[in-house]
Image 1: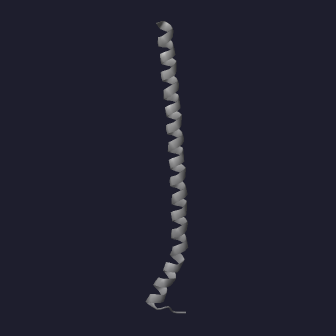
Image 2 (image 1 turned 90 degrees about the vertical axis):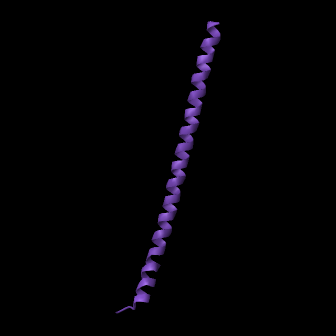
Image 3 (image 1 turned 180 degrees about the vertical axis):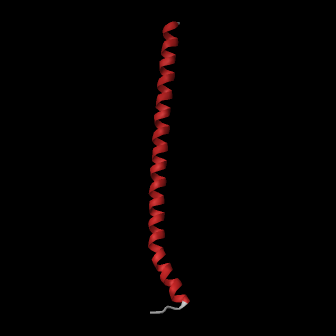
Length: 64
């Protein structure tokens, strides 16, 4: 079974499309997960920073 060049390219494109879509989707998921991770880390860091500052100020208040 021989294909012309045009048929071959259309076939390979047809095969590639779902793969590309899947890659895009997984890429999106990965980016979402990364973003969520970064956000969690930022929130945690801010919370820790606030706690440290709070503890420090409490100590300062006690010493006065």
